[in-house]
Length: 232
Image 1 (cartoon, one colour):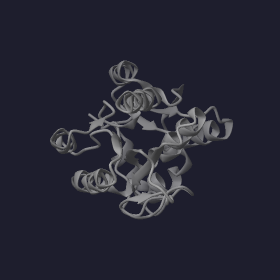
Image 2 (image 1 turned 45 degrees about the vertical axis):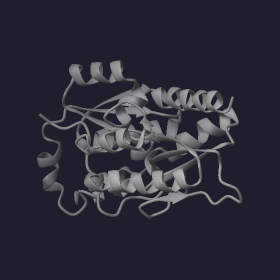
Image 3 (image 1 turned 30 degrees about the horizontal axis):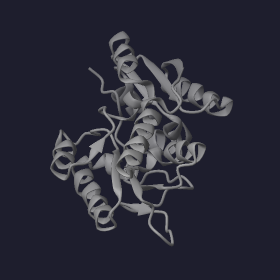
Image 4 (image 1 turned 180 degrees about the vertical axis):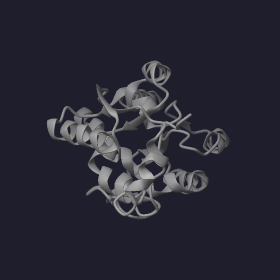
């Protein structure tokens, strides 16, 4: 059966807000009281949710999306940021799926006493766990895209897999897929058109689902309420 995700190439696309290092953080004169540790592929959405709610006390520290190609490195990278946050006395939340770590990330977080958003990957918490299960059951041969992956489709998928140089490899990579499902975080006609073009490029049926911030927004709101309780 085809997988629901695709590995990123060794040199991924870098969004304007993303720094090409294993971890990065916004420099502040004084550290925020709380931190969300996340993948750089989610950084835009986390910042948007935080800004919309006026959560200036929460900062986001990100680990490059490049590590999706080396998931065994994710727990150590997360621990580095956890240690730094604990040294500053910050409240910590992890906005990461398991992301191919085989439970090692959860084992680390349990040992550190840190919570994370439920779910195996961002497709699940952007669409919601039950809805994602429905998507998967309806068509296991689904290739998923998010806003981040639509923006960087050519580099991450076409050039990342070498399909620009060897188009004959496309059936090897995508022969078992039937549809492309774009789980959108924004209602952006340009991104929708690019996702449709991506589906056409891969020879897949196209479907669109607007999930917004999905369970990510709910998880961040719950973390913010927990912060408020602890400060009473």
